[in-house]
Image 1 (cartoon, rainbow, N blue to C red):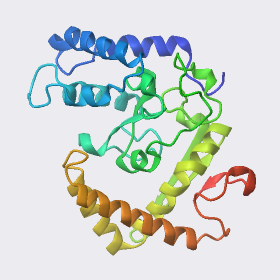
Image 2: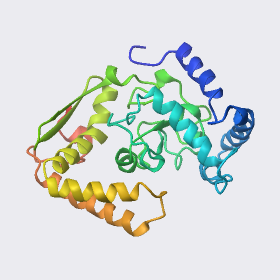
Image 3: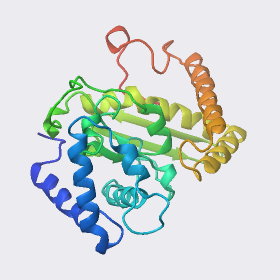
Length: 274
């Protein structure tokens, strides 16, 4: 299938990851044993992600959840060119700024909470915007993870080469910034309409309003130094700020449709993300 990772490349990535599952080579075998145990339990419908995250987290070395996740970020981040799996902005070198994204959300698909192909690395904004959105029509009790060619309804960041499905352009001067995304396939168009259209609109608003850009950057830089949940008041404020900006962007739309308005069958098609 054009625009889809073939089985040989999938096998190569799996083999490479098994050699890099921990930052320290001597801890690799123990890490894989721990992950296989968690994976077996996840297949029975347990959401084991929090258990992985909290595993021996107080330790600074050895097999710990945070170090396992750091190794995964490093491995998959390199495959993504150190860019967000969705918007392709550069990923910061801070763990909290590049969360691990569950393509099929773990709230709806706990059996895939530790599935290798279900995990990518996103930026903070894309991860927060997508949240637990279920894209596609896969049944919640799906026994096996769908093969790469089954993802025809939406963009899968681990299976779909980005450039085959979406292109983006960024133009900046001293005072103006503008980003656009264009979907080239049904999967790419879906990503633009559901996520990138909003990311682009927010970024253009921030970048072209220096005071707002500076304030948002300060808040983001501070928040990204702390694990999720450590600053509930700040997280709530940023969520409210995003909602407010969303309303402003919806009200300013030239086409009279909000950024995420009616279902696709009731609104005009949007190929471009502004």
